[in-house]
Image 1: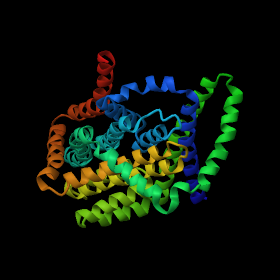
Image 2: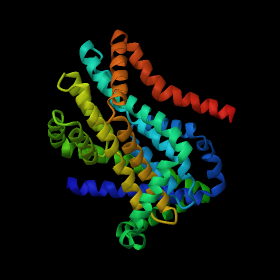
Image 3: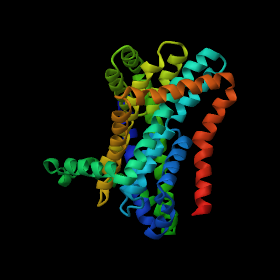
Image 4: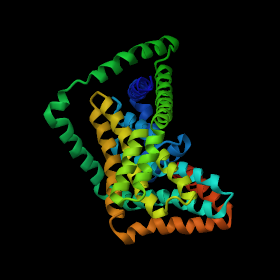
Length: 371
């Protein structure tokens, strides 16, 4: 029954992604252009992705929505605008484990250990964006690399001509939903907005329930896999992070599992770090699933942006982790911040409030008035 529920929730999730695209198609081009004009500024796109992920507490939801928008028939969100949003979502997902670390505030040393493990993920993703966003703006290497890779995938063995039965099922399931909404709303625009809202709710609800169900199914197995990876080589620990995140469809669960272990003194910052990096790569699977389920003339664009997410995390890992001097930067920053936080808990609360909520909101306001 649980396995059947997983399949059903995956179908509902993919149905939401397809419905999102159809909704934006019905909404019309003019309104969409004005709506996404703000994301032409890459820094604004970064903040949109960051803030959206912190609000829904899931990068999987944000990246799936981005894939749906990029792959929509009207193509409301250009790939170039979506790339910084994907990077912002990568940063936003780290807020969950940082909030989990707050639960250890009552005990000083426990809080120091937990907070350092939680924030090393934050610093790694911020450094990745600082290094790769300017490089992407100058060269477009992520978008070009993802485009080339997607061409190879769709061109392999005639896959571009393959008509997936899942796509047919999704189309058939979406039809009565569209008809039902059309019967309730007389206005085409209102019907399109209703379909978009419903699709977002389907994506969010399906992913949240899927994550909860997979966590229940895999809980003991995940703990065994993680505990085995703690005392192995960094590469093995990374693979553990990828595998666990792919199993539970949430990097937040993987990284949040490490926080109490660190607080209890069962693992060190250096042991947790490669698992965290692996979780970054593992979380890209959700967007790839969403991209492979969409159809239409812009379906290729959805695959490209999903691959951008994968290439971004792989590139960040290859740049930061192998070189000790660079690898130590997020570790030292997390250690320093944890020491500051145990002197006054207010600094920890300010760190979360400013970095994940106030900064992106302030940037949006400034961009609005200057724009």
